[in-house]
Structures are given as structure tokens and as C-alpha cells.
Image (tube, rainbow over all chains, first blue to last red; front, side):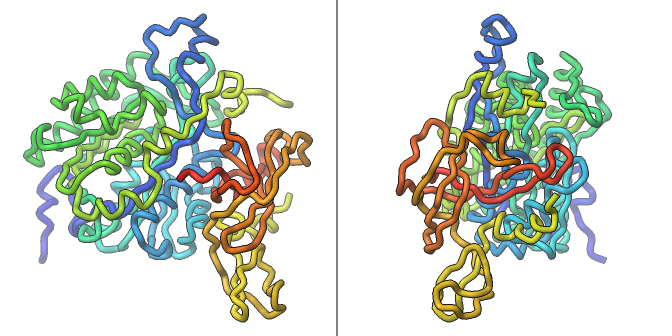
Length: 360
Length: 132
């Protein structure tokens, strides 16, 4: 009987080579500067602001509309017929419906229904990478040729809470397929998961609760360093083997600090660190960072991405860029173009766009 | 509640899926199964590119029922690249000024909620300034 050598490792490796054949991003147009939040809630005290500004969704945007545009961009790069997709999986903690999948609407809009798996994934900010790992399994087992995994959010932050500075909107979509068709091959994934109560939102609650400083060391830093270091140890790699590293980015400082802990330089994380200018896009955070890296990556570049989701867990991915990247990077709108499309808003407009004004 | 109507129109609303006439090759939107140009039967689906330009526009400050929370917003007649003219909201305008002839592209957005917070969310096409 044929055996899979990967089963002897703690890493997750697919039996068949799997990679990214198309990727796409979407970031809304509106930006709320952190100084605006400080103006309203901190008497204008701008010391220690966690980011410069965050992306705010328009009145007509939500996780579904974000996922649709990111997926259309991914299809432009993948150059496949949408009906060849066998899964549409949307990872988010802001699905517009409590009961009714986001994924069926996305699948219908991009033209890949009805012969397709569809489902919504939840794991706080790592729901998107969880969907990617599942898609990797579907393709790597030979069950499907192509699968679409999305991480997107319109994050909620209680007015005046520390999270209001950063809770942002955006998302990224990845079409996974056979390694030989890929613009970037996923060499392996590794997940590190524990029951850690650092951040949660109970049913019917509008805003999440967070465990203050408990969100740092036992949650974010513990899980990312464990996932990242196990990945490198098992792969036999060093930080210097990677041209780029992307970490979940709830603010500017956390990814910088965790990168240093793992031995990565500021130069290695610079391209994928978008939180300072778009905020924390939650399930979109790490995967949107990866789109910015893929936009400028060259064949042969190696990338380490480690997501983090509260509750808590991290998915690490070891990725190698192939020659096919060059012919597909320009097929869809780049991440920097979405970031440059920017209209600054004040707190009043933000309050209206985010539904914080009671009209009835 | 108009759930059956929303369900029936989803393909054309989500992705600008219309028809192409097999007799005269005219592109038809919205789909109506009969070609308005040659009168022949036309049931072949056709997905429009979503690219077009503003043919005319107006700002809505007094919005019809179901759209009050979006006001003020801009409605436009958009001439699609393939010919038909559709009526749609413009979105993501930001601080840009709108002009006749302005290139726009289709995006799928929330149109409204049918029956406030409890009802279904209706998605459909809008147009925004071309990103480049």
C-alpha cells in the first residue's frame, strides 16, 4: 500500500502538490484616521496610537460584497472557468446572516454554483487561513482540482474601546489548485491551537469583549511563535531562508515584536504589514498581507505566513513562489492600488457608515 | 416581502447576466427572451463585462421606500460597453465629481434590506468610477 511520508511529520502536507493559482484582494475606499477616534474619546490625546488609519466599509458593503470582489480578482489571475471550482469557503467573524451562508451568495455572484461545496468558516481572525488549509486538503487529496478560500471581515469595535482604532474591513481570496499550475506552491502548513479566552463575542452581541493585556503574551505571541518556530524546525529552515514574512496584524507593534522574537527583520515584514494604513481586517489580516507580498514577489521567493485567531490558534504556511507569478500579477487590481484609493472621513461619517446612529 | 422576485432576478442582479440574440447578435439587458432589436427569440445567456460609461445621472435626496438610509445617493443611466443602458446606483464616489461620459465598472453591493433588520439582504449591481 502506498504511504504518505508526510504522515510521519507534525506538519500538514498534501499528498499531491498544491498551490495558489490565483489571488485577489478588496479593501474599501473610506479611511478613518486614528486621530479622529482620539479626538472623540481621548480629548485629542494622540500618544501611542496603534495605527495611522483604518479602512471603513461603505453603507453598501459587507463581508459578502468584499468576498465577491476579492474572488473576482482571484479568478482574473487564476484564468480558470468559475464552474471548475469545487468549493467556495468564506472565513469571517462578520457574516451578514446568523443563519444563511455567505458562501452561496458569493458562489452565485462569481458564477460557480450549483455544482460546488459551499460553507462559512469561523475562527475569529484565522477563519480565512483555516479555509485555506481545508481547501489544500480538498485539492491535495485529489477530490477537487480547484477550491476557493476567502478571509474577509467588517470588524466590529465598541465606540470608545481600544479596538475602535483598528477594527477595519477588507478581505482576500485564494484559489488553490494543482502545484504545477500554481503561482506559489504551499510546501506545508502547521497549526497550533489551544483553548485561550483572549477575545470573544457572544450571540446577539454587537461588539466583542477582549481580555485586555491577556490578548498579548498567552494568546497572540504564544500561538504565533509556536506555530512559526515549529514550522521552521520541521522544514529545516531559518528566518534567513524567507524573503518575506507575514504575521497577523491587530496593530502595528504586535507583528513587529513577534517578527523579532522569531528572528525576522523589519525588511522581511515590511511589504505584508498593512495594518498601519488599513487597520486590522481580522480574518482578512494575514491573507491581505500575503496579497501585497505576491504582488511584488519574484520566482523562487519563499514566504512564511502565520495567522492568529482568538480563542485561540495560529496557522503557519510555508510558500514558494513559482515562475507563473510574473504572468498573473498584473491581471487584477493590486493591493497598493486599493490602498491608494482613499477618501478620508471624520468620526461622524464613520458613525453613519457603521450603523452606530439609531434612526428609529 | 418579495423573496420570490429577488430569487428570480439574482443572476442578472449579482453579475449582469443578460442575453445575446442568436439572430442579430444584439446584447440584451435585462433579459426578456425576445430580442428588442429584431424580434427573434433570444434565450442564450450572456455575461456582460460590467464596463460602461455614465450616460446621465441625478442625485437622490428624497429616496423611495427601502432606500431612505442610503440618501443622498446618485442614480445613473449607464451605457454598457456592449450597448444596453441600465439604471443603477453609483457607489464609492468619495470626493470625485461625476460627469457624463465618465468610465464606470460594475460591482456587486447591498442594494437594500427587504423588511428592515429581519428581512433578507438584497444584493445587486452598482457602478463605481473605474479603478484603472
